[in-house]
Length: 221
Image 1 (cartoon, one colour):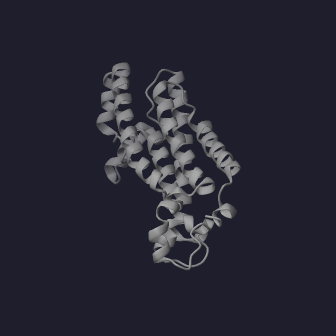
Image 2 (cartoon, rainbow, N blue to C red; image 1 turned 45 degrees about the horizontal axis):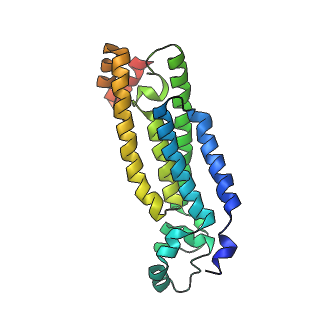
Image 3 (spheres, rainbow, N blue to C red; image 1 turned 180 degrees about the horizontal axis):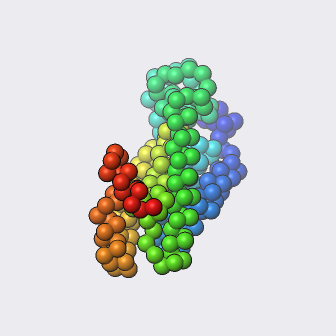
């Protein structure tokens, strides 16, 4: 692993990138209660695990080095470009940063952070007025903040997949579903019929497209 020392072991970058992406999400999400902190903590754990492998120690490359070495004998597995595993295993040439999946990952990251920002803005003002959040992205889905976190994590998986984050991703998705259901029980207790009417016409995670979805969005404005 002597070649790994030139492209990995940069723990300062692990800390810097973790702080940037966790802090960036925090500025949009601003957790308040225990449920918020659980969802934000799960996202933070994913980010730390990701950057620990991206710049610190390439655990996934190390564990798969036997198989990867036999399949790609001419590739420096501990060079940083090899960490873009989707690019490597599909036999692509050139700079992986300009690959379709890498560029697509930026679209998911941008969409996720934008959704977090817009959802928090609506939720913050609704909570201050002790009202149900039904404006902005809440016109289309009941839990846009969780969708935002999932979009960000999926974007990073397209960019830099690791064994740990690939395992964490479905577990965190399940956790967000359970948190959403618990949040809905609290909302029903707090808002009663207003919540039930909102939930009856607004999907939990997947927005409705077509005439029904557009009509719902118009009525919510």
